[in-house]
Image (cartoon, rainbow, N blue to C red):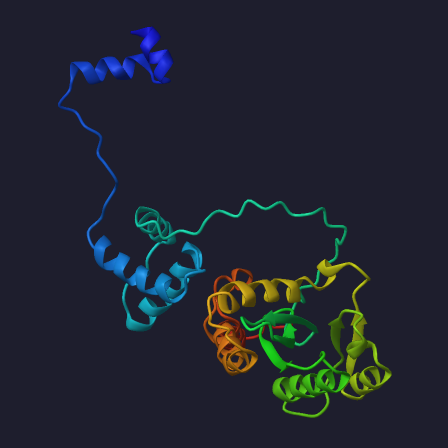
Length: 283
């Protein structure tokens, strides 16, 4: 018996107990009342957003339940149901490269540091759409964006984004206090006209070191999100179709997408909660 147990890699005492009490069986997978209805709600979310894991699925599920007055669901229960239904994502096994950057890009409050960057979207007919955006490094809202099917993002397009950000956040044509504008060393950002225009708007141009993408990590994270959760799961037959979908993608990211850095709130939900929280007494 010991030889057989060792070969199978099981405890001998457990096998003896099973032989003595064959009527005993394992309890099987754990289930709770209401699991079937809850799984249907989860499946509706994952069908619409196939790149969402259990944490974001639980965030959207609880957001809908909170609005309807239903009890919230523990995300561990969501994970259990998604595992049983094979709805979980494949674990990420990639290794991160060693990062030399040790600074902190995230700002302690909104309107302290805005970051800007660009990315490309390849269409199925080989056309390329080039996009640039500006994001607040605290609340993660994308305040402005531009897109083109031309050769690249121009300095004029960057300056238009700068003005749109100031008008959106301050309802003015000049920021009331200096705001950092963090970008890479692209010619559209380093052009003399762009730097002079930023100064006029009370923006402080800052540039990341060469070959140090981590220095603008908020933008890098957003590009990864937009490509994974929107671009790759949407039809992209040509540039026109992509340009038509871009407003919907950015609006969904700002209003709906749960952000892990914002306690699973969307950027606009996070901004609304900041506005609703009374300021601390200075005394």
